[in-house]
Image (cartoon, rainbow, N blue to C red; front, side, top):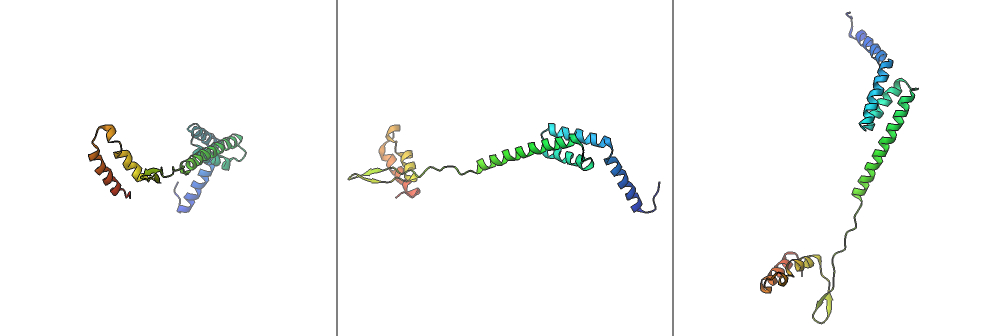
Length: 150
């Protein structure tokens, strides 16, 4: 069949696609696809399929029940993801800088900064690991100057 204009062919194609979309076999196949998406836990795709069925047949009870189930599962998934994101972004308690009193001559105390505590931890146990104090003291002093300990 040959048409004189392109528009008449498009009109015929539009009528054929509407008739095909409204056929009962089409609704059944859409229900099958929607159920496959539900089984695969792809809730958004299942909702999309059920919405298409409900556009064609608003009284389809199976499609309405499936849509509600998919929507509830999709919202639960979104709520879980949002809770995980909030937990990830939640500010964590940060420990306060380490300040411990340190005895100086005369019993006076001086706070110890994190950098100084790190240097003391790194080079303060020289005797415990059988190194001479003469080699540890300059390294500790160098550590202090590099990290801004006064």
